[in-house]
Length: 143
Image 1: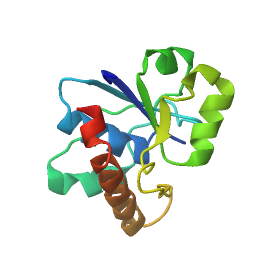
Image 2: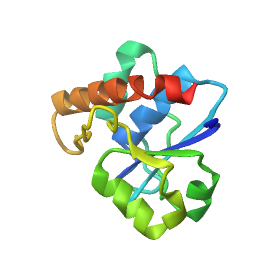
Image 3: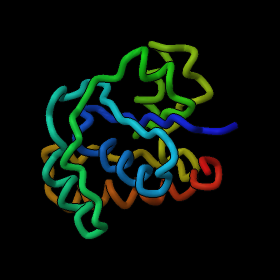
Image 4: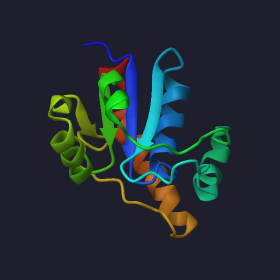
């Protein structure tokens, strides 16, 4: 199975999914990577703290604009990444055809990625590290 279109999902699409999207784009520049929120803060830029934890890696997310997940995005995706089991379930209940292509990033290490929204920078750094280690275990399956 070839994953050409990858969609990353969190709640607001301003903290975790933009980080994962940016990391995936950095690792797989030839693939189409997108992100969205289950309850997106539509039109908002990335959370400044998310940008801050990515700065040391020279990853700029200043052009990110939050958007809501919809039928079109899930249809186009070959693989959908979520941050938790409950988000995976939410998507599969709305779009049953997404079963089998929707997984949490921490699937292989059985880890949810906690939402750092409105918390201090250390929780954003933890989320970034959890996303990095989660994506690491997907690398050979994606490439």
